[in-house]
Structure formats: C-alpha cells, structure tokens
Length: 270
Image (tube, one colour):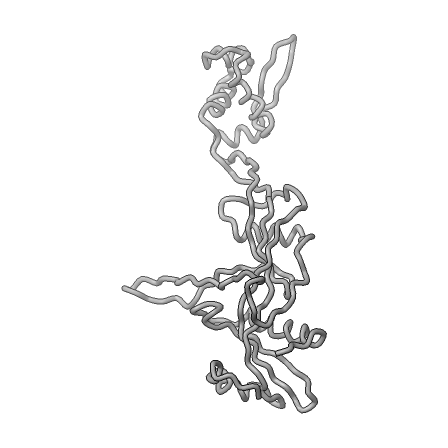
C-alpha cells in the first residue's frame, strides 16, 4: 500500500470496497475535458413590429394594392420602409400579385393566423455557444450540478454547485491525455444539447464546421485496487477540489470504468 496521510480517511473508508481486490493507492488524477466555443444558428419566435402588423391589418380590411396601402400609411411608394413588405413575403405572411402593372397583396394562412394571435414570426440569430466536452466518455458535459434541496424559512431552495475546471497545462498531477478532440460533433446530439442548455433559442444549424477548443481538466480522486494476479481497477471519486457539495456519483461511476480501461493501455506511473 502506497500510503498517503492526506488520504488516510479515504483509505479507511474504501479499503474493503471490492471483494478479491486490495486497496493499493489513492491519488489525485486530472481527467481531460474540452472547453468548446462554436457558432450556432439559433431560431427564436418574436413579436412582429407594429408597422408590419398595420400592413397586415390593412390588407385584411380590403386595402390590398401597394399604392393604396402606402397612401393609407402616409408614405411614399419608393420609401425605404417598404422593405417591410419583403419581410412579410419572406416570412410567408403575404403573397404579392401583379395585374396590369398594379402590385397587390393577399394574406396567407400564416398571416391570418398571426393576426388572430395563433402564430409568431421566427427569426434566426448566430450566437457563440460555449460548452464542455468529456474527452474520456466522448460526450457533452454540464459543469453545473444541483445538490440536495434544502428547506430554509419553509421555502425550498436548490443550491447550485459547479465542478472546478482547471487549465491542463498548469497541473502537475497525474493526467490522462486529451485524445478525443471534438471536431466532428453529431448534429443531432449537438442540437439536443444546445436546446437543453439554451432557453430563448432552438437549434437551427451550425454556422460552420469550425470549433474553438481549449484543454481543461477536473481533479478527482483515483482509488486503486489490485487483485492477486496484479490486475488493477480504479474507482473515481469527486472531492472538495472538484466540487464542495454533491449527492450523486453517476458521472464518477462512468469515469471509473473508463479510467480502468484507459489504464490497461496506459499504466499510471505514480
């Protein structure tokens, strides 16, 4: 046993955790993650502007020609604000017709639905989407976790806590190498994760295939067990350098298996 007084309480707590295995070491290990920034085209519903709404109401009232609508609104037929007609056409609210060189408009089903407040305009917005990626598990990672609900003054409050991500190059701990840089992310998985993490936008597309990545790591405790044949397995546990408060070990259970598999090809030199 490579005893370390700093982790004596961990040794005492977990020494008999696995039958046929002896606890042989406890050490800090840096698990690889990626901080990623990717430009995403998001879609959101928005209220139509007042000017466009008046145009729709005018057409509904029977004022349908371009000339008549402009006269009703008190604007020139060549005014720059008439770009709103193109906006409404592009969004499927109206269609234009030309008869005897006279331009007129007709409401579509979507235009009628909008006036009856059954539909909203959708617009696209390009946003920088920042997220984390678990290198070992090759999956998206949310650094924010939620601990047990606590009752205070008869009001239930959820106390948030975050995993502490550190710059890998600054760490001197035992490290697992970054091997799975997230270049080609599955579009469906990215869309699902984006929609989960973003409140006011839904995923529409990627602006491009490019992605900015930065190496990050989270410190965990690795509890090493060895059997009579010398085979080793590792249990990964979070602790105060990772996050101050926590209640589940779902991530750590997956990491334990992944770190054990990694060690078969890349033995740790402690």
